[in-house]
Amino acid sequence: MHDLSSRRLYLCVAHRVDMATFLPAVLRGGVDVVQLREKELPDVVRLTSARLMAPICRDFGVPFVMNDSPELALESGADGVHVGQDDVSVDHCRDVLGADAVVGLSTHSSLEFDDALLHSATYFSAGPIVPTPTKLGRPGTGVDYAVACQERSDRPVFVTGGVSADNIGQLVSAGLRHFVVVRTLCEAPEPELAARALRRALGLALENV
Figure 1 (cartoon, helix red, strand yellow):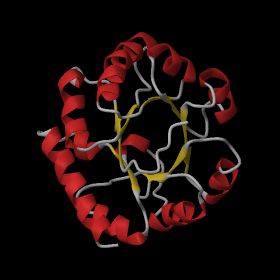
Figure 2 (cartoon, one colour; figure 1 turned 180 degrees about the vertical axis):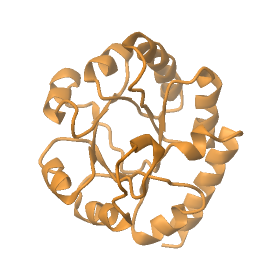
Figure 3 (cartoon, helix red, strand yellow; figure 1 turned 45 degrees about the vertical axis):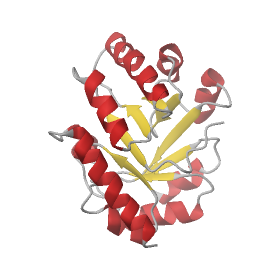
Figure 4 (cartoon, helix red, strand yellow; figure 1 turned 90 degrees about the vertical axis):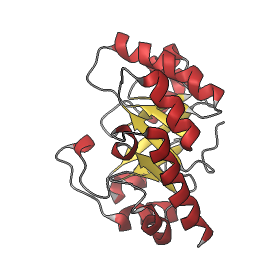
């Protein structure tokens, strides 16, 4: 089974026309988990993108997961899938992908996290700690929620929402160790440099705890 406990920087990225150059750049910069998070485009486009991304991630030794659909994950050769509270169950993901696949589960409240711990997810996400454009209309949970989840969890908890090189040190100081990144890398004019800066800030913060 994949162990994500040593993984720190988790990129969520939508379909991009420049994926063949963008993805290797951020992987060189230090991203160590990748999710294709694409809800709007047809399955055929998602599969095309995933089939490009999966071997690139494999070359870097980085787990690659699909969003929402274990069936598309299986078809694309992904290492697993990430599901939300309104998607298919973790048990269904295991039925489709098997016991060794990566299965991630989003949580946004203490009650959801209580339930999540009962399931065989590989890792959890907690947040967004601040409101974010990728989750329109969802209020921020605050940092304390993510910290409380990590303290109770026997598996990695990846914090979501506005993670950047400017605030990752504060998040590490609060007790967090695993981070989902979207805009900091996806909107960067130089993605590899942005990833390196983020990884450097993370490394410095970890040295001081």
